[in-house]
Length: 239
Length: 122
Image (tube, rainbow over all chains, first blue to last red; front, side, top):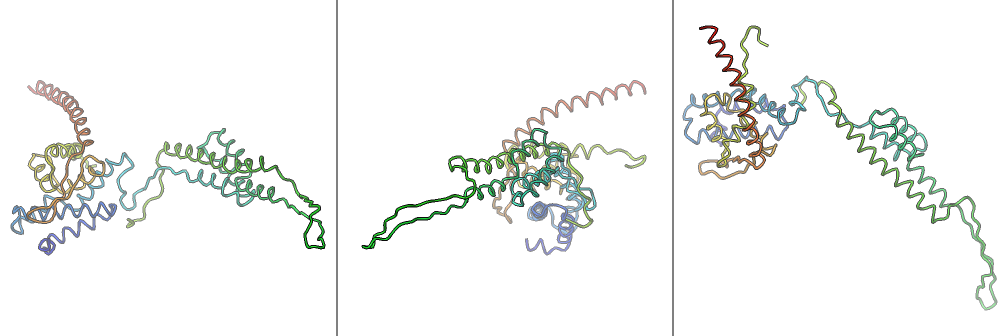
């Protein structure tokens, strides 16, 4: 191998190949250069190449590095089911349509409602302007998340912490024992009985999460059926 | 493309069928890259740019049609051997039957045309 790398002709060839292959993903680039380097080294080990002329013939038969890299991009394109070859610098880039808007909408309806009313409101607008949900699903999104998950938590906090104050009256006997005579508790504020209140609040938190997952899955499935979108031409020289 | 130039359909055709020729060569024993390329090159008209076989092998490996393994070599550094996978065999047998039909259809059309021209000229 040391002998191989020391040969300026081979070194120059592999250098050109490595440089041309910069348009490939890094692991493919390394695999390609390793494969070709191995090929050259095998040819020399096998005794098929003995002098400089033989070496040049070998490299000619391997082909121009640019052609080899072009072929690598061709086979990538053929194998990836039509997404396209790794684009040449400056060529337009297509990608599968994302569901970013729908993800944002669902996030705002749930987590975004931490910002009371406003976050949820923006989420509702996003839901209704998306074309990836059917009207029924939009209604579901709007009605199941009323005010958003965090509103449920706010409300839960409000209801369960309704203030309670107790006062006891009693007397201390002469022998030091305390006799309690009366204890009165008063609640201020409205409170659901715990039996109803806790499941209600939990449902308000859990149901939106279930609906959120269903809506996200559907939006993504529909996005996947749409044709690829043009993102942007690559700036020349970018990887 | 090339005004007045001749079309070159063969490079495209070759590109399309080359991977199945590679798979065919691997039906027997596993081969290492240099050996595989040498055998392909011995077939007339099969490979013009030997270096392009390597990206093809990488893609076949990524697609699961071949598997690779490193094996020690007596004469030099370890060699990467390529072997056809079960999936590769399936893909190859599907291609072989499709290829036969396609080849026969093209032959029927091309040779039919050639006969007509032969009669017209004669």
